[in-house]
Length: 376
Image 1 (cartoon, rainbow, N blue to C red):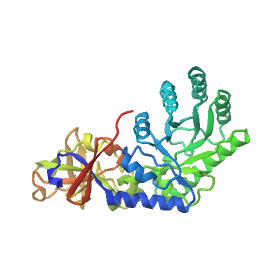
Image 2 (cartoon, helix red, strand yellow; image 1 turned 45 degrees about the horizontal axis):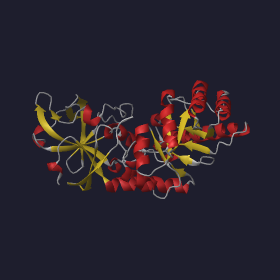
Image 3 (tube, rainbow, N blue to C red; image 1 turned 60 degrees about the vertical axis):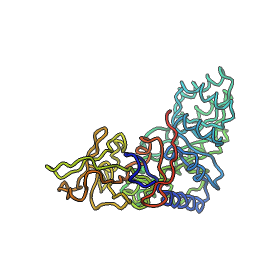
Image 4 (cartoon, rainbow, N blue to C red; image 1 turned 180 degrees about the horizontal axis):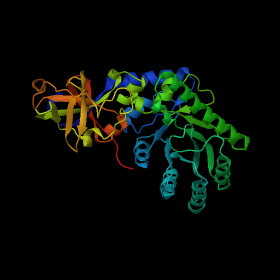
């Protein structure tokens, strides 16, 4: 099937680029002597996840219980649910443990620890837990020196739960403006996690797991001593935010949204395509970077970017395409019915809008379709 035969908008995946991205990250982490626990929220597909985990000793990271179920059904049992656990989900977690899923959960508050302890007693299950550590004030987690950390571990272990260690995600890496800043953030992430794990061990808890990572810090870390695993996920596809950070090049981006020109706005020299925010997402992750890519960078149907042509605006099903500087496009170059590909700001957000991928093994051919799991 050619790209001109696909129903638009749809998600395309360049497997050659994806494989290069996977190999690059695997090789880098092997050189640093640490295992990869890939975050499969980006790909949400078992075939891709198996390629990500090939040759890796660890399991996977997920962001929803639906993902955990999907990958467990396909034979992956070692799973970290890397979102602070909502107490209302503890019965669902207990059910999965009873079915043989080696599912770890995370938390960062004594109240949550008490809820887990109560659920452990009521449900007759010993939960496996990582304490989330905050390396940069960006999102969730306890500071590495927070007194609550040891309190949390004591509450859990008295209830028969296992405190397996700590995890940290340096979301602040997405705000770094240069490579040196990224390296410092990677070290800050590592040092925070290692310090927290040492505190737990001094308090008598084994805490064997020291889980760190994001795609930017995994890419630029120079030393991962003390870390036992790295979580990275967006590296599988890469995106415009990663390119803006210097993590990858534009031609490393493996997914794009295929769209069709449905109209011209002659008054301002812009195009309308049938890919709006329902196909592209509302993510504006490049807005704070040196080069603002709007809602996506526009390419021809073979995937070659046009110079400074971006998606300048979106409605639900309409994308508005124009020049980055606001000047008019030559609309004759983009006739109604012609097809364009749009590279995403954030691979996770854009891919989440679609039920699956059309695999392209050559620039113009879609060979097969891979589904994505959905839901929470």
